[in-house]
Length: 595
Image 1 (cartoon, helix red, strand yellow):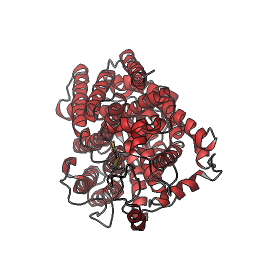
Image 2 (spheres, one colour; image 1 turned 135 degrees about the vertical axis):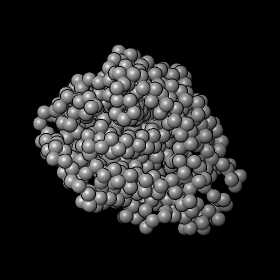
Image 3 (cartoon, one colour; image 1 turned 30 degrees about the horizontal axis):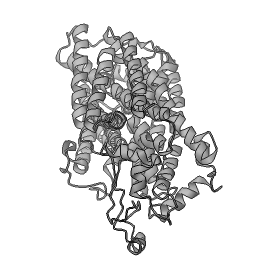
């Protein structure tokens, strides 16, 4: 069967499933829209959290970044996984005990201030919009390739699908849709990895295959990769090459950013009890581990396969010819991806071959001159395409290619839906109901939530057309914003009786403003291309990259909040008693209406 038809069958069937579930579980009340009626089983919630968590950045982009950089990009794995443990142990049970619908609602009540709630809404919207840009980027990449349309058209189709099931289903519909999406994405991620691991190492478990021997040579696979990439002038795959400061700050930004992400925290409001919140966090870690243990193997094996395709005789032999690329079935994936604009090559020296090497490496200059090379001829390889192209690169069956297409879209759409829920809840419940129109009826609040989500989809789609980086890089910026603004307020709200309303507001504003300005200086104002003053290659402050700055912003948030709180009046006695009661995670209050 034709690959295009197979893609349509798999993608169409998965979308029909998602929309059908959303109709079946349509939210009929604000409790169902915001928290799925607090009736989700911990195992199902863990699975939904896994899908909510494993976004386009995890499924599509992370392995690509690991593949092309190697050990240095293991920071994504360390930061995201460590952050989830932090969230599960130190935040989720206490927030569930509090018995509210949203993160800004907790901040507003804990810091006894409508202003604090409003600032939290702003922080949430800025972080979530930045995050959802990365998801829409991933949607555009996947649709563009597998439905053979432009990136822009693919993004618009994805936006329409999210609108169809998220706007009407709310948290209830999205939760059960995400359970289905988790099953699709984990199946789509692991099956190709098993095939490729068997091909290269003879081991059916990719994490073990990564540290096994290559079947063809009997040598350790990682040693073979190191040898191949260094011969082509690239950095050694298994060695740290980046500076320690950025590596530590970046990992820390991802960790505390994870623990401050509103759309993930909201998942713990959907279970009946505090004990269920703990159990669902444990199950989520299990479900997340299935993908995260596989990702390094996917990245390494893809790098090996790609390099061998460009140098079929080895790095010291002849490069692949243009004729082979254009006529051999093994290289058909290149022609297909070239149509999306995310992959390109150019025979610069006219020798009929495509030389892929690091032309910025001085040690390669002598070989390049003696061989008549005039620069790296693989002119574009977008990191976001690697996982989606992996089955084709490894020449796997067409149904596996179609399955990966469905999985990539499931990952991007599930997280996009969660983020859009967080945004719509903040606007309708915290801004409209909590601040502007407190007497709003439940029906009006539900309608405003759906309108807010529709507007958020439109904004995210527009920004997704010109993202500030690869999906994982864009997501890293969102984590930095969440780390600098929301996480410190949550931690101090739970574990400090002394931090007051003024301190919390000042802390959040300092963390948010400083971090956002630092990001805009490096990525462009409001992510508009060519408006940046600095680059991550030449950062503004102490060599700290914009993706690593969230940890600095969080430190400034903590410092400002504590200093201001100590210089002003202590919180009222009832608030201090509230903090004490929240820290005893037994039982769980029902969601309280705003007063």
